[in-house]
View 1 (spheres, rainbow, N blue to C red):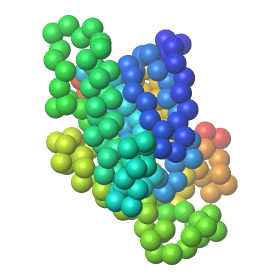
View 2: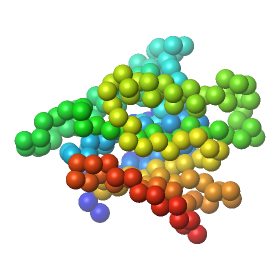
View 3: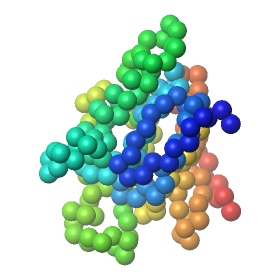
Amino acid sequence: MRNSNSITLGPSGCCAGECEQVEIKVNDIGFGVCLVLCDPELLTIAVAHVLFPDSADNTQGAIQYPVAYADTAVGALLAQLIEVEEEMEHGEVEVSSDRIQAILVGACDLPLALSPDTSSNSMNLGKCTLDNLRSELTKSGLVSAKELVGGTQRRKIAIRDAKIRIFTEGEHQEERSVEEIVLRDGEVICKNDNKDSS
């Protein structure tokens, strides 16, 4: 394995690095949204597990954990990715946010039994977080290459060697691969898998 670092992100966690130098996992993506920013030309990637729509009620929390909130996550994660690229030996390729694309995963509607708060605000949390992330991506001039959102099943992501694999729980909580995204030749290539692992 070429990856020298293996990282498992928890809620409100984030990391950035070169695709061939880091292996990233995000488990139990429920109402939260996993935001992935990637540069398919320089093969860099940044990932955050975003939990809340905005930081209006917790500005201090947003200072400490900017990627936890949709209104601050995009800018904070983009800055991390650009910092990684600036430290790379990238030859003639100029560091630019124009190449960076986004992938959004999560925002599922958890069954009532799994949600401690059955108020309308709680049930709309994932959708509001997703909508705000989309808005912030647009403001930043970033393109969303792929979205795998909604539904009632939790998901997880495994990133390794410029491949992003997205898994979802089946009816009996078994895992099955539903999507593979590859960064290759300066492009983000989405491949449907839809094969049960069982």
